[in-house]
Amino acid sequence: MGINDTSTKTNLMYIMVGGLVVFLAISLAIPVGMALSGQSGIGELSPETLPNRTNLTIGQTAPALELKNLNGRPVSWADITQGKPTVVAVVLPGCQPCERILNWWENNGYKNGKNGINIVLLASLSSSEIEFETIMMYEHLFPIYTTGINNMRENYGITGYPTMFGLDSKNDIKFVTHSFLRELDYEFFKEYL
Image (cartoon, rainbow, N blue to C red):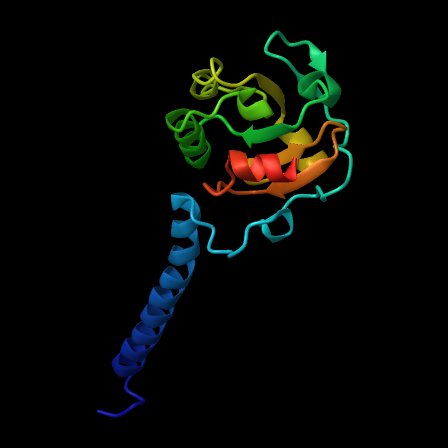
């Protein structure tokens, strides 16, 4: 039996592929696990160090977007922020990481207007949304607005949820992140908004 034996080659291939799979699983699991647990692992937290996979940039005015309130009436960023620093949490109904951030905020006393910071939810909806109730559970804490999922993708480059960004009193973007980090707390919001 030599190295040319078909079963030996097949076994070696399985061992090499198996090792590669284990390596990739560990390599991917660590940052994903840190993100899901809310640990950023990025050291000093600032707007410049946040992971951002959107088209939004710090310093730009929030681009116009087709936004609606829960009554279906069109609203603008100026209507939503009312000239106050505002954290916008872009969520997708049924999204587990989105629900985690909202549960974490609720359990830790976060709500709109607390500490002079507005926090609003922007639900990114498809044409037929059956899990919208999962977002509506938080209406007592945060105003909820809606937009189409295609609007978010085409105009803001948002394809991952949750995504958060902060607007100052002039609706200029002060931070953007495509993930939930527990370190993004009221202290962070106050410092950078």
